[in-house]
Image (cartoon, rainbow, N blue to C red; front, side, top):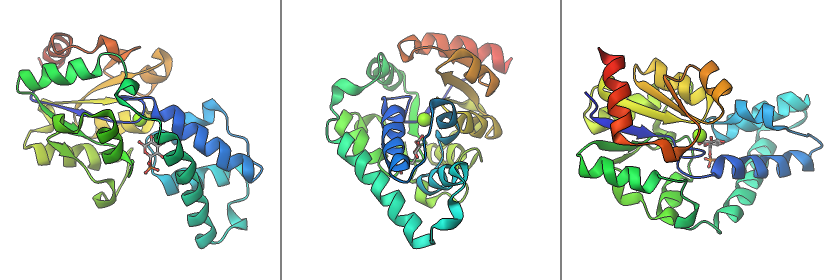
Length: 224
Ligand code: BG6
Ligand code: MG
């Protein structure tokens, strides 16, 4: 049975997947690269430096920057991003998420966060939902990022729950792979085709559809 729900943050709890895209677009534009939404799907769930590498590779100019310059580019992107974050309030929580967190808490289902973002703790604070999370995995302590299972496994371990009793919720291709490799039941939030192709066990078009009853139902069918 279901004992823990482990959330991704960006694009699952709030619309920061879009804000990351805006900040990367701005940075990319300044060095003559255009990124589109399709390419952006590959950046979701991926760390800051790795995202930069992918963008530079796509633009065919990775070799023109030194490591130090790459760090500066990544810092500039984060500056744009943090600037956007200053507008964040609890109003920015996706539909149904707060209610779902309350429902999980009331039913003693453990709650964890498995986000690749170093900005995650400050975003949870701005959304005023930090109290719900028993565990927020620090991505800097995880050797291999998504799609490797490490970050979801680490959350489960810290929550003292067997991965088989966990549900992971993601909006990214890399993240859904990570949940699958971790041996957890996965929920993909987003476009049906993309989420199905990424291997989500259950696809929801909106976070408003997240309820414990629904999860328990799907989970028990899956487990039996
Ligand atoms: C992930 C996002 O959650 O965090 C990625 O999906 C982002 O788009 C990554 O690059 C790292 O975030 P940050 O805030 O540490 O730059
Ligand atoms: Mg995400």
